[in-house]
Structures are given as C-alpha cells and as structure tokens.
Image (cartoon, rainbow, N blue to C red; front, top):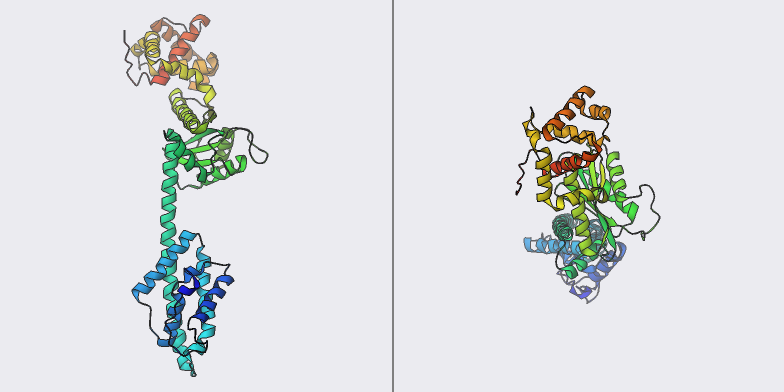
Length: 410
C-alpha cells in the first residue's frame, strides 16, 4: 500500500490547502520515521478514522475495526514487533492531534474536549483490535512453525526417502546435511514434561558447545533428542565436555532432580546418517534397560557386541534355552539365579563384590553359583565355560527371558 492510498474522510475547508489528504500523508510518514521506518501500509485508514471522529464524533464501525485487525495480522506476518506497531499507532495519533485543532476549527474548550474524547475512543478501540489480531496471528504462526519443526524432526529421524526435499527443509533449521552428525538421546526417570526448563537449558548448552548452526534439540517419545555436528570444524573452540554425551549428562545432572540416562549414536554423513545415528542411540536406550546397565552414559560403540548377539536371534534364543533353561526349575524361578550370574560377571567374577551388589552374604552367593552349576551343568567360575554362560546371560537380558517365553526351532 502506498502513501496515495491514505484517503481522508474529513470535511472540506481545512487550512492545509486544496489537497485534502496531503497533511494526513505527512503525519503518516512522520510517525513511521519516528518508530524506525515501520511500513506505512500498517496504518491503513487509521488516520482518516481519527480525523472523522474529531470532526463529527462518529465511532468506528465493526467493518472498520476488522480492517484494523487485518493490519495487526499483517504486522505479525511482516515480522514487525508488537511494541513497534503499537508505538506507530500512538505516534500517529499524537501527531494527528497536533494538527486537528486547525482541521476541526474549534474555538471553545467544550468542542476541544468532545473532539479529544472521540479521538481517544478511536485510538483505544483501534489499538485494542490491532493488538488482539497481532497476538492471535503470532500464536497461529508459532503453532504452524512448531508443526513444521515437529514434522521435520520426525522425517529427519526416520530418514525420509525424499532426500532432496529433506535437505531443502533442513536449511531453515541451520542443518548442513553434507556434514557428519551424531544424535544423543536423554531419557529421564519417569515422564518428560515438554515444557520444563531442562529442555531449554540443554539447548543452550549444546549451542554454546557446538555453535548455533547444525544443532537441533527437540523432544520425541518422551526423550530429549540432540543433533550436533560430529566433525571438528565448528565455530570457536570447544571447552568443557569433550563429547556430546558428556555435555548432555553434565547439563542434566546440574539441573538436579531425577536421574537421567544418555545414549549416543555414532556419527554419519548425510540425511540418512542422522537417522542411522538416532536408531543407534534409541537401540542403546533399549539395550541399557534390558541389560540393566548402571552407567548413565552409553556410547553406541559399547553396545556393538550386543548387536552382534541380536543379529541372529534364533541362535541366541537357542543358546539361552540350552544353557540356562533348567534354571526355571529352581525354587523362586530363574530370575534370582540369573540376577546372580549377571552381577557375578559384571563384578569381574568376584564373589565378595557380587554379594555387595546383591545385598547378600558371600555364603548365599556361593550357594547360588553351586545351584546354577547343578541345574545347568555349566560352571560360571570355570574359565573354559565362563564365556558361554556369560553370552547366554547377555542373550537372556536382551531377549527379556525369563519374563518372555523363547521360541526355539529345533
């Protein structure tokens, strides 16, 4: 909208010459300059509304206020701040009032009072409608942007087949898909409240650590997801934690409250690389729970042996059933004896440390180990048989045995 679109509807015969709208255009331009060159189109017919209210006392009708509302939405779309657009309207009203006494040609105080009341009514209603529409437009834009971000993250972590489109969509988020990235997941004890301040603090920490580009922090499936560049070509020196996992764990521990577990996928190139790293991190969380690992930070490299075990599930199920299957005959079931084996191997096959971990006496642990040997025929203390029993224990944890029945094809 140009200056010429401002058309006054005031009575003829003012002191500003034959061009009835030139003084309004001057007021509009001056107000826009005063608030930092806000687009003049955002004033619309606001000034003629003020001029006519001062001249006739007429209040703006619903259609005129709706037009102001559209201008509020337009300001939001243009990225003009709410403060600037309100200041524009107030500045324009003040400048307008300085000109109005000559326009209205009022010589008595009562006339000036009535004109002032009419002008203030227009300003009040117009600014209220302007702010209301602006706020609603911004709310809709935020929801739209959040939806775009959520959809992009879903497609990114899933590995969208349309690579070209995914690369284009990544640009507004500052992700260079040609660089190697890695994904870290942080899982809290309990449910994650997506509005909690922890998420914001993690995002600030990752941005400060890796730079403001190629960084993405979001929530998915009740976890915090952090995507960061894995190469060393980042702006500024990295200080503090050396790895993304260390960073997240340190930041989450500082936040206090509940414990967290962090898993990190390995770095890969390209859009599929992010999805692959995410899958490794997600698989790491699942394995950490099944294996009941104590460490709060787990790197994908630490779990490679478990992935090898799971690669042939029928074979590992057969191993579990063959080596440990007879434990179900024990009083109390297989779980207490399986937990004893798990703690025994984790402690380096040291009976006293196993007893401490299980809060049992050394005698009780020794009894359980003997019972395992009797039931299974395998001695976990025998170096020649230890690997077989340990692999079977890991396989049982990964497959969820004995809670979950194993299907073994003989």
